[in-house]
Amino acid sequence: MSEYQLKTGKIGDAIIGTYKKIEGTVVGGYQKVENAFVNTFLEKVDDEEADAPASEK
Image (cartoon, rainbow, N blue to C red; front, side, top):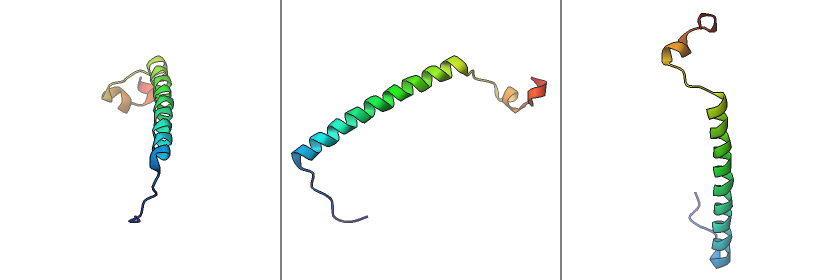
């Protein structure tokens, strides 16, 4: 990696902070949708059930 880094200044730092807040909100919203889907449509199975062929279930 380079030994140089871009100087962003106060405005750049504010923009980066705002971007990170927006990103966190979007990712958090996606995780809520993902968890709701998993809780609604999927169920946890035991290891023995997961290893058995579908015809034996």
